[in-house]
Length: 83
Image 1 (cartoon, rainbow, N blue to C red):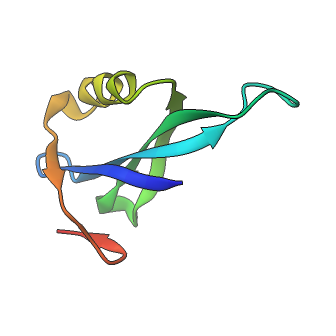
Image 2 (image 1 turned 45 degrees about the horizontal axis):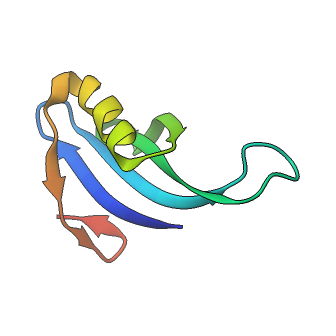
């Protein structure tokens, strides 16, 4: 697993990450690459409030744009945090 993109919303105080992960759709299924969208509330001790998986990066990105009124900007990853 690794984070391929991180985004932040100054207007709403949220952070979103899109991670590439190896996943199985059911026990015993062949592994495939999937994308996990996670959203955190920075104003509430980085509480995870939304987490869902998609089969493509574009699907994850489009879902993220529906949250926080689409007010996302790309963030640079820095150590364990974001710029």
